[in-house]
Image (cartoon, rainbow, N blue to C red):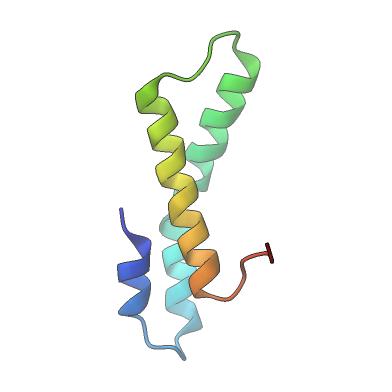
Length: 72
């Protein structure tokens, strides 16, 4: 999902909409998946890796768009 496109549609003075978009990113699913693999002896397969990368990409897009991204 492209969160950046959704962010572009939100008026710049609408912090509530940014928060709502952040809430839509399924952090619980992401954290549950990461924990499950930390506790497991097996490694991520290609689909699982892609799913985690998609989640992280969405999170990074929101952080960048809201000026909350950590400096490189």
